[in-house]
Image 1: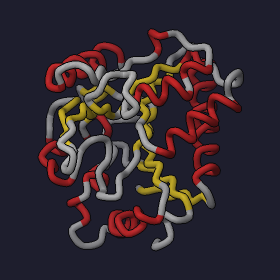
Image 2: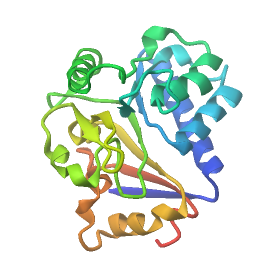
Image 3: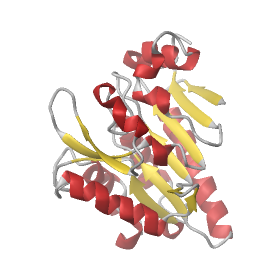
Length: 241
């Protein structure tokens, strides 16, 4: 079932996600367990990271969170385009957290080899359900072409991949990226799309209404095994619903 939550602004959306992370981390801490969290790049996560660093610096049990990435551009960590680099600058450098809790995708490595390496990391560190690593929470974005993670419309074959990670290729720039596959994404306990901006509204409408050839969008192929998918949209992204 699709759960749709609409917020007036992207800041309100980010605040709700921050509260959710706090809640889930506290629940795990109470059981002396880890929260396995996969994060994405993009403008909305940047806002979330800023919020977490400024307002939740001491109110989240950071030592109970293990951070992973949904995808990463094949660039060094110090590159401006690195998803890890952005999170590190805005969030990790501002809070008390051990390096062992941050399992980045190494964008400087050979992409195919890194996809295999990261798959092994997931298999060895995460709980396994249905023979597949299972995150507690995955935060996804969606591009204005309907892509999610780094699975683009011209690479829909990756939707059917049995691997945990694959190499996605940006259709315009040709840039390679290491990405989780829907096999892993659909196996999470909680899967949430964070989508903002009116340029996403038409695709959101098609996906939510299952209108026309909507499955051509990779984001439409995120169908969690537990049946629960949450869309968190700002007013602009939801304007056509």
